[in-house]
Image (cartoon, rainbow, N blue to C red):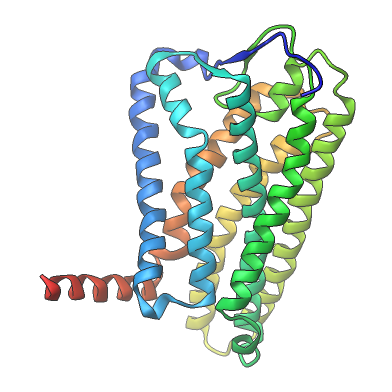
Length: 310
């Protein structure tokens, strides 16, 4: 770090307006967090154990579930501590590490969402060519590339943040080290940092969103051409569930990050971030796999093998 910082630690404010309901909110968010972790851990475990689920689709889904576990675990424990005992202190270094993990894992997740959308497009719209194009080796390369690009892009941004000076108030009006809130507290000239954050958010969110929209548009066209009304209804039911989750993810992130002035609407950012860190990780296991008949069958087979082994 070139600049020394007068502020060596920050205080996470959380939600002071509802802090009197801290114990109730602690219980609710703890249950949501545990349910999310259990659901995503189940997806990872069953994909590794069940032979029928060792396909590119479920390999991508299990990787996405792992990222969701990392994503929520980066911020939810602090949020629970805030609900339980009020404001929480966090050191400058720990704050940057939390921001780095949260944003880089989130960026990788968006790249993976785009890849998953393309995977479904090829499976539905190009079923004959799909097995030759998508396999576990290809998925491993794509996942590695997504991780490398996601972490590389965010590393430069965090390095730029680490060079900012903080010499004024040290209370972050959020429940984790949000980059927009940190910019608001800096006493340096933050214009270039804000523009870099805006440019990266625009690149990551809009690029992955366009890929996802194009993929699902082609899927919808293919579904409309199905001869059976029952098949169309079943396919649309699955797609609509996916699109609800995607709308929550993209809507909340675009609201928070895709704006040139990161210091605007800080209060409303907290509510949008809650959707991203609590609601969608809880819905993802239900929407993507736990409603899937293949997963149900794999769970039954695994349970039967466990009973027979005992």
